[in-house]
Image (tube, rainbow, N blue to C red; front, side, top):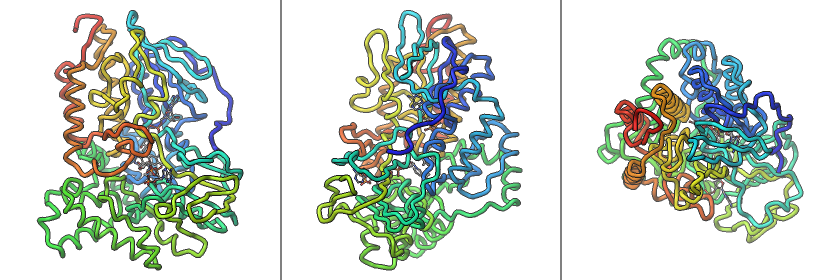
Length: 550
Ligand code: FAD
Ligand code: N01
């Protein structure tokens, strides 16, 4: 598959062998973590598998890639100077623009000198006698550290599909999450795309503009809204900048980490049919994933959800000329929002083009990938290029790709065999001094992730500062606190419709992965309050040791 090599060779000048903190990953999370810890005077080593900073935005270079939280909110808030000086040009920034922004941040705060690029962490071993971690890399580097922060990303372990013959294909093949750095030209080519989630629906309209013919292999139709992307006006940017402090604060205490999303108080069932049509139309025209926040119970009550789903289905059908094709593209057996709602630009309209064909692989399943293309139960599609838009081993994939153990023999992979277990999504019992940014059990992927990253990074750095100030060497989540948190996370999730979908939130896209709802559905503001109270109360639920406080 193309796009997996990072190109440039390794610069070992960044490598330190004995540090206070190792941070794994140099995306939004790892970079801010480095900045905070460095400001505290700590010695930090960041290790990144890619050849440069950016994380998600370094790897996902597929055509059409852009964010779906508005750019003015999908950005760091920690530096007033930074947020005033940076100018976003579009409502939803493109991948190149977001990557340029992250590079600007790395330069502005001089972050690269502490990042070892082109290096993949393979294991981390906690020595219980010394309270220190030994972090090892695939290429043989070994680094000792007191604390280890996994800023490895929720959506960073690309998942190719488990289809017979996947590697036999002799044409060019790509995974959206491992896209090549050089532009790919599909002009005149016969191209196949497998997958119609967020990555697929962004890729398909762009590839269709170039391809001779595009075959879209769809297993599950997708709920998607027109993004309503547009250029940002100078005046509106200035207005937001003048009120940035207030906007960011509202985002931090909101349920989703997005200040501009509504806070509904009404049930969909309390409104009349006519009122609902007006409300849904308003949200539809506004664009944005806040559509499922039109009423307070869309994600809780099947009947309410159906009102939103029904409206969305009618909208989808109005975008496709051929009614038979429109029906195939319409999601029927899933509650809207229980798989991540997508935002698109001309996705459904793309199927009105003569050079685009939908292959419904629910009725005619893919049997195998051959040397020349994709074979379904009723035809073989000969292709020049094949794009896997098949997603990620989400939330746990990147962490469990690292062999994490303690000297007493505990392994994280074994502990999480039946699903991830954490306290606050920040730590896991039995693994002292190991932090996760946006780990399972925290709002993470159900929020504006940058807001959640900032909250976690600040909590972790404050915690390390607290330990340092009190000359403590070790912090660990207690088993009781973890059990209670896991029960709380499950209890909240069980009350929602999320539990009914075969989504990656539940690990359903990875064969054999335990079916556990991984993110925290209680909301960003409520979660932040809990984390802050725990820290203010002297880190309730954590065992702190090594000095005065136990
Ligand atoms: P990442 O950006 O994933 O960075 C993790 C880094 O860790 C990667 O660079 C990876 O190479 C590195 N790494 C992992 N394992 C190892 C290892 N063993 N050794 C060394 N390095 C390692 N969220 C939103 O809120 N809004 C959006 O609009 C949005 N759009 C998205 C669009 C796409 C295409 C995708 C895939 C995700 C999107 N997300 C969005 C989620 C996005 O992942 C987060 O917003 C955010 O960028 C995550 O930052 P991070 O630093 O936590 O992780
Ligand atoms: O991945 P997905 P993604 N045979 O898992 C199909 C974020 N993101 O990369 O639904 C055939 O959502 C699978 O079919 P099915 C965002 O959080 C954000 O698109 O399992 N098909 C599905 O259609 C998002 O949720 C943006 O039946 C197979 C698709 O592949 C997350 O990343 C943009 C298959 C996978 O969809 C992941 O999105 C991009 C198989 N064997 C990503 N295996 C924004 O716009 C899988 N599929 C912000």
